[in-house]
Image (cartoon, rainbow, N blue to C red; front, side):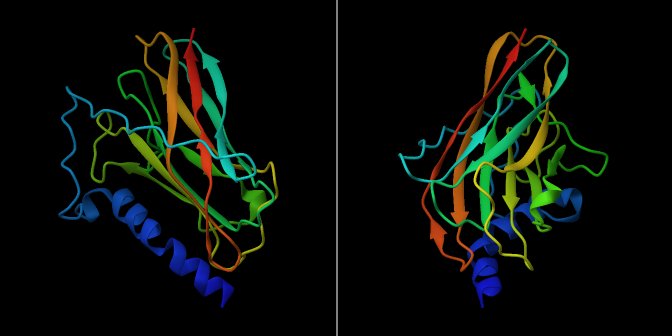
Amino acid sequence: MRRIALLVMLALPACQMLDASAGTRSAPPPSAKAPAPASAPAAAPPTAPAARSGEPQIVLGKVSGAAGQKVKVNATLHTGGENLAGTQNDIGFDPAQISIPARSNGRPDCAANGALGKEGTAFSFLPAGCKQGSCNSVRALVLSLSDVAPIPDGAMLYTCTVQIAPSAKGAQALSLTRVGFSSPSGQAVTGGGVNGTVTAQ
C-alpha cells in the first residue's frame, strides 16, 4: 500500500517527465507553451520560496569555473526531521549564460545517486519539446517504485553537469521551483529549496 500511495502522489510529475524526455516520439500536451526560438531564449522561471526553519529542503551547490567550461553541481536533501521517500524539483537557468547539456540520448546530463536505491529517478528538459538552446529548465524526480525507505538527511540526491557559456561573466543562478516531497506512505510534505550558483571566472 505504501508503494502504491507513493506512486499515486508522484504519478503526474513522472508522466510529465516521460513526455518531456521523449523528444519527437511524444508531442507536447495541448496546454504546453510552444518552445521559444533559439534566438530568443525563454526567461528562467521565478524562484520558489525557501523552506521555513524545520522544513525539508533541497539545496543546490555553489560552484565556479572558467567561461566555456563544464562544472558539476550537486543537489542535497535536508530532511528537517521528516521521513522522505521521494522528491521532485525544477532547476531554472538562463540558457544564454549557463545550461545543462543533453546526453547522447537527448536527456539532461544529470545522474542519480545510485547509493539511494531510487531506481525511478529521472530527468527531463522543459518546456516540453524544447530544443537545445531554448530549454530553460530541467525537471528532476527522485523516487523508487520498489523501495520507499526514507532518504538519509544530508544525502546527495543527484548531480548535474552545467555548461558555462563562453561569454558568461559573474554569478549565474540555478533557481529551484516546484519543489515537492513525499513520505514513505505517499503523503505530500511541505518544504522548499535553496538556489545554486555557477560563477563564471
